[in-house]
Amino acid sequence: MKTNEKNQKNIFHICTTGVLAALIALLTAFIKLPTINGYVHFGDSLIYFACIMLPFPFGIAAAGIGGGLADLIAGYQIYIIPTIVIKSVNALILYLAIGKKPLKQLICTRTIIGIILSGAFTVAGYFVAEEFILKNGGFASIYTNTIQAIASGVIFLLLCRLLNNRLIKKQNLD
Picture (spheres, rainbow, N blue to C red):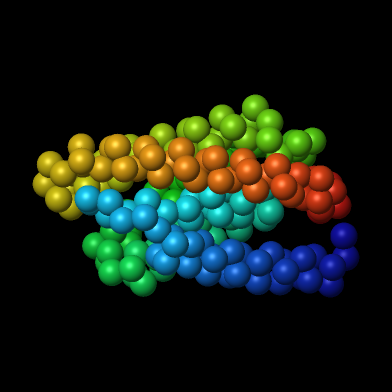
């Protein structure tokens, strides 16, 4: 690949990362269902989407930046650092589960395993974070974070179902 083409691709990936980070922040901060100890949102479904749309490590950047911005916007500033770490690791887990081999179908065993492991890490990560932040408050978040992880995974899979053929063709062109 020529240097100019590579630069254009990098610029495209950086711009797409910014747009997806903003969408993750918006979906997380503004489209939410309030709960006793926070809210359930669907930003994680867009984090998964960023990982299938963008090459490594751009999806990780979109996840961390978008999640951190959402906490800033929504008034949960105390969670910004844990969220950046947790959401970045969520994306890394999905990348590792999918692997470098191109997907023939977006909904496959690798994707589903990645979503399950990523969702489990969300629950565990926020449990640990809330144990430190709230001093023994982590158990209260397990139920809410589990519901959030399941809902985000289902929404992502529905999105994959709608966009499967188009994204597979795009992925194979990269």
